[in-house]
Length: 455
Image 1 (cartoon, rainbow, N blue to C red):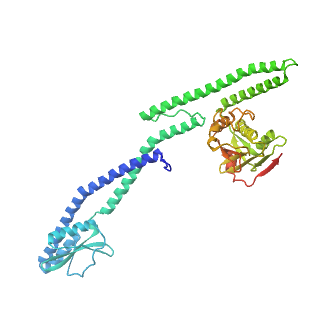
Image 2 (image 1 turned 90 degrees about the horizontal axis):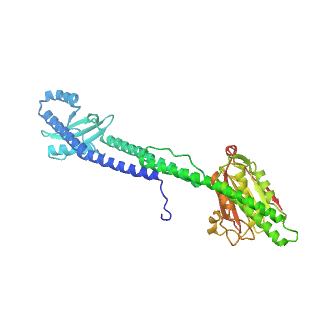
């Protein structure tokens, strides 16, 4: 896809394509109907009307003067014609009326000279034609209501109906096509975020039904694979801890004259292995969802700050008052514990900051350090299991490479978002976004924060 090109949704593309095709078809149909049906009928009608107007004018001239009045009354009753002799000139017709153009042509063809129908509109619209007959100029007219037709309004209504029906048809067709695909896309997103969707319903369309059945089988296989992975990791971790306990016991039973440096290294290795096994178990359980509860962030964050605070370590804590979130307590504690642990481990002994505030319908928790930071090209890679940046994540500082992987999976499983940014002036910002609790969402956004600086 070229840069700057914004993709369209399948629904929008389908609607525009189907609606455009139907609208073009209807326009071609209307044009063909007008040209091959309505126009010939209008020409025939105009010619018949022109013949009747000319005949009426010539008949009136040839009648004896004493019978003309009766003939005029008969024209009004039978044909709605009004007839005058030597009437005052009328202004030229300004409005373009297709039927009157046809009537002009028909009158001109019958009389052998150009004739233009004029229009008057006082209370009722009348059309007038000046017809030469018997050396006189006879003005004969008829009301607009005599035509009993309104071609412009007919075409307008046909066009409006065509547009509406085309749009409605396109919307129905596009919805039938895109709704199952949207359900598939939503289900795929849930699987990608670590959630397992319910089985998708069969919509009765053969091709989409086959796709839905295949997707349901895949979702079931993913569910079984994740369950097997969790069971496997838990079993391996449990089995490893048994010989690990025997190793710890054997180290403690070493004689007093054993090399204490070697004993110390063995003890540290055993503790590192025990911590690594714990990380494995955490990674295996990361996709297991926890029922959300309302949690107050201020006491939670201050308690966690106290857990990692040590002499000579400065940690600033700033939390918006009465800020509550809806989250699983164990999952949130694990995420914050890992993020704080990373900030402490890689913060180069510089002061740390943690703050929390409300942004819209979310609570934003930021953990800021002044460590060496993470190169921009590595910001996404650090969430991979066992991935480490050797320049800062070395053996001396510790770390198994699973902490951020567990954080990301826990966030995905609970619908949270986690991002890492470079901090201005050096260091890293870990930004965690969680949904507010329902009661908190109903309250107006609070003002101010409470701050604390500890050493």
